[in-house]
Figure: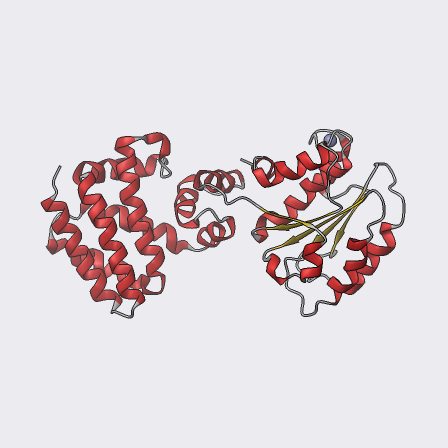
Length: 327
Ligand SMILES: [Zn+2]
């Protein structure tokens, strides 16, 4: 799924589109969401105001708006990596009194995702939000709406981008050129957050960890083998949360591979063989029990218990439960 389709499928975005379609659009919107989706979100929202059909996504207005080159849409700051400044807002105010060139409306996109050291720009913007010139729409993107002044917030309609499903995150990563097998692991570790998924993608650890965990559950048959896996996994001490989440996710995936393959995230062929071994070696009852043992291990490490000894213990218990609750 490309990011445009992904965003258009969100209820929060559909609501803004409906506002424009029904003639109830607010002059200003605050959009809160994760940073990597916001620049594209702003451009899509501008289509709703600039397109004569309320955001068809096919006309010249929509095409130019999604590319960020529509003559009646101005974006601030000029560089996405900078914080918004008073100069940016001064320019917005000056431009807002000029008539649109080709559309019925004029749109201003304010990307305030880079924290600003001052709130001067917000004070400056207030006037435009209080008395917006006719046919002017302002969209302000933030990662945390709580950082905005109450007075700014109260003069705009606030929306929050929907949390993504894991399959949507995976699809987004694959569509952006990432390898499917790695994208699926990143999706599992993302919690529905694309920023998080991209961090996992750029770091080898998540994927390597997944391969070891799959191998461990598939091939570890006796306590004499547990040391081998312990020595492979103990280097992830500073990522224990990720490691434990991955262990739980792999077990759930193994269960799904037996119960309902349509819900599976690790669908890449490279995972199929190991998942089927795990699924035939661990009963549903043992998976449920081990998942709760992993929760206990996490709490214990959170409280300061030694990581290696907790992991060692956990691996031995996994073997014990596997043996006791045989299929
Ligand atoms: Zn259009």
